[in-house]
Image (cartoon, rainbow, N blue to C red):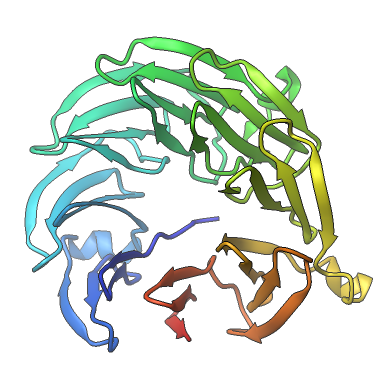
Length: 331
């Protein structure tokens, strides 16, 4: 369930290995530097890292409840802090602050300069949390995130005061929130768009938390907004084109129409990206598919691996795919 993030700086790629070493590769895939800030005992646990870039620095969190900042030019450590529990959300940086949610549903704001906590907002603790990382977006005056109960929460980003909370699942389902998988939140103008694996796609007003519209679409993948349309893909391989303001479904395309039913049940979508005309998506059986947005036709299918692969990344006209033991670059 871990969703790694690759960081690109110009033509350079930053990622990590299974022992927690952070590695910077140049455009020829040669190592520029490699650093590791874990003890022998911690390396054996196989730490999982999350990244967020801030100028020349890289903010790092892991499943061992550590937070640290390094210089992307040379990998040198700037500061390092210990948190009391694991951090389970995306990292979001603005100015000299960063925001993150921990496994106790406590949302915190930290100083990027030294890692000191500025404020925190405590939510209800859950015995078992969803394995999917939660999402964070930053508005003009607020920071918005989804917690492990399936709620969308808006806080004042200066002091952490509560603006609003919007539940997105029924009470009975919230008790089983460890089964809930939300997509990333996407902020566009004054609205937030997201979906979940409980057959719900939402548009929320950022100022009041009101639900603008809701559609019966199931997806844990981050939706893409292009002009006045929203693009999302369900786990069963259905491509949806949605009108952004009304929520009306413009078109639905079955991307797996030519796959036999028995095989189709075993295939899922791991992630996708979209340009103005094309969609590039990765499947759970190790393939990359290129889809024409205008008509939904599949332009080509390319096998990267026979095992699990990450969502696709694009940098400098290249597609990057992360596997268990490699990073693959495709023209």
